[in-house]
View 1 (spheres, one colour):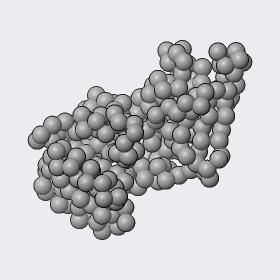
View 2 (cartoon, helix red, strand yellow; view 1 turned 180 degrees about the horizontal axis):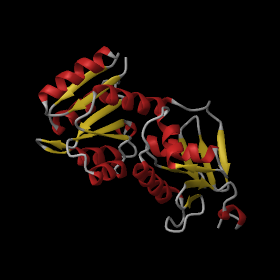
View 3 (cartoon, rainbow, N blue to C red; view 1 turned 135 degrees about the vertical axis):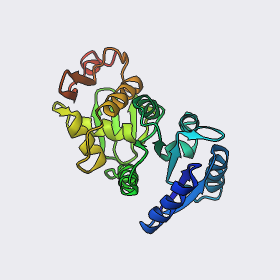
Length: 245
C-alpha cells in the first residue's frame, strides 16, 4: 500500500482527505505542522518503510511548506530527496506556484479543490516516478546520457540532480528529439491525462533543466525555445560537434 504523508493544519480538510485517499487505497499519515512532518519522514525512513509522497500545505503554524520542500531537496544523498511532493496553497498565487516548482515540488494544487483532483495529481506524480524502461536503456546525446531505467541524467559521466518531474520532462523532450513540443503536449505527456496546460510550470522546469544540464543556461544548446510554440530538444548538440568542449 502506497504511503502518503499529509501535512496541513486545517483539521476539517485533513479529515476529509484522509478518508478520501484511504478509500482510494492509500495509507495516509496526517500531521499538522512541519516539525511533526519532518519527524514522521525520518522515522519512516529509519524503519525502512518510507513514504512515497508528501502533500504539503504552503502555510503552516510552525513554518513555511516551501522551506520544508527546499530542505527535502537540498540533501541529494538523502532518500528524502527522492520523495514525491505535491504542494497545497489557499492563496492560488502564481508566484507561490512558480516558487514551489523551482524548489522541486512535483505538482501544485490551489485551494479550494475537489479531492478527486488531488487524487489525480497524486496518481500522476507516482506514475511518473514509477515509469521507466529497463535498466541499461540509455539515450546518448554527445556528452549527455539519459538512463531511463535508473532515472538519471549524466554529463561526462557525472550525475546531475533532477526532480522527478524534471527528469520526466527531459525524457519527454529527448524521446522527441528534433521535434517541437508545445507546452500543452508536454503537460499531457507528463500528467498522462488531458488536463489544462500548466504553461508557466513547464517554463520553470525547463529553466531548472537548463541550469542543471547546459554549460551556459542563458544560451542553451540542448533544450531550445521555439518562440510562441514550445520547446525542442536538439538531436545534434553543438558540444558534440565541438569535440566535447
